[in-house]
Length: 474
Image (cartoon, one colour):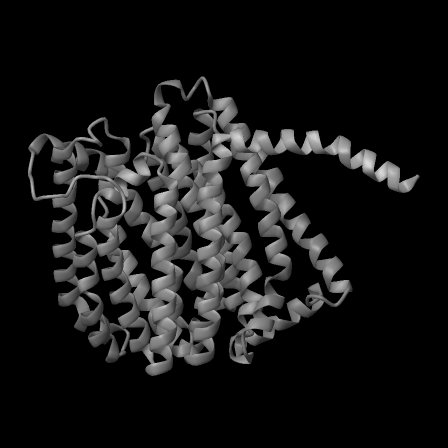
């Protein structure tokens, strides 16, 4: 009887499963989200696996040094961002060859300027941080800006046309090349130069690859005042927004490298690299799905606002489950994957993940508003976050501990989110109630999973996790 029942149930369920599968296949948004999420997840697994291997080959101080170098490099790129790529994505002239040539010309000029600045400031930066080796490292890294400036406009067109498969191929090829080269070089030369050489070589690889992928025109130098004005006029808010974004997202790195022992700063860099995986999921979804789609329906966005809000809530609910679960098990992952030199990251990582949750909320709202042609709210929100960090973080470190400073990081992300919600509400994209419920859900999920797995001995219990706070003091 049970066998007959099972057969009948399975037979009846096949049409249901077929319908569900067909529905997912016919859902264009689901398919597009898959091409964003699946390659990204694969790339992150490769990166994090590489991170673990490199941690076994290199000292924590090297990660602390590269944290500073990469922060300065990213800062230079963001502080000079005039929205060239965003202009191509949203402009009605985005497919015009002349407009693309002008965009590429501006990109190359930006690369020349950044390379020159990097060469000039290399010595002063080394003196400020009292690290003589920084001078030579920055000289070696400076050509990256010029190489990036010569990247093909194909990358902008891929984003504009939502050609997500091509972008997935591009990103995966870069990840495999960079990770493989980093490990080989770390084995051959186990010092900071392994990571520096891998960074420059991988950037060169992506420049070549950008011309082999996509179907855009071969770029050439061209100048047109009208197109330059269009890009710069839209880009002025992008420039302000990204400048403040860099200050808001990188101040902690620059501050901790100076305020903490370099080894502990390196441990913080490891924890931050894992928390940023989640942050990058939101950023990629915003850049390659939310922004282009909202930009494409600008005239109908108020009509479709309800559906957009509903979709936003569902996607964020899924992320809430992922982040809550991640907070519960991330400490065990660090303890398993890293040696005792890095175990303080097991305490730091769950706290950073909750800060990243609020960063993800902000990223979604900012991308939607950007698609509406409104980058100003994002700039203001990042300015609020930076102000909190600038004023409160040094006070927390002076009067408390690194634990207090980590609490400030959460508070700064909450402030950024709170500053963005009014503009998102005005467009009908978000509500305080939705985000507050989801934020509470993250903590509830983290608590339930932590208590359950902790009771089974699969992860540290809440008490055992809290006891690791002592590792922050060395």
